[in-house]
Image 1 (cartoon, rainbow, N blue to C red):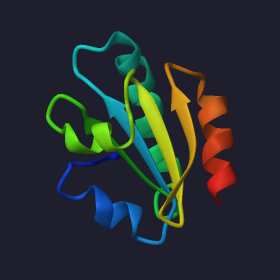
Image 2: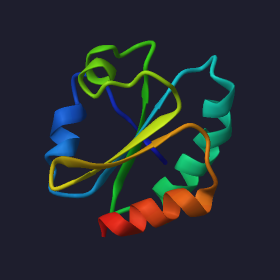
Image 3: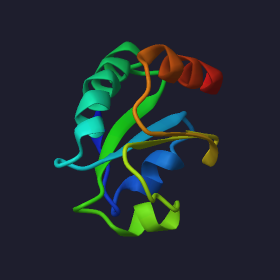
Image 4: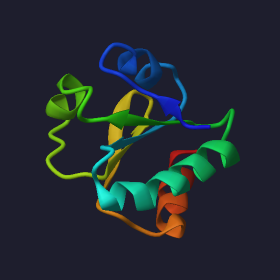
Length: 104
């Protein structure tokens, strides 16, 4: 299951030493509802290898501002605590799998 990231806990995950994938989303966002189940699948498939979670942009404003999130869904990919890739907008699972695999 995808973790729930917040402004308060995000840094500990990013600095955990594991690759991190964050889906920035909102309840009212149609494309976010399309990507959400894919993110959940990836969280199960990569459990123990990659930290995968979601951040609700309506409840957390500091982190989206820090990373310049202007459109949702936006998925950020971190390796060794550094932002290494980004996906803006809905996309196919195969595209996200390729980006996750690149983190490993």
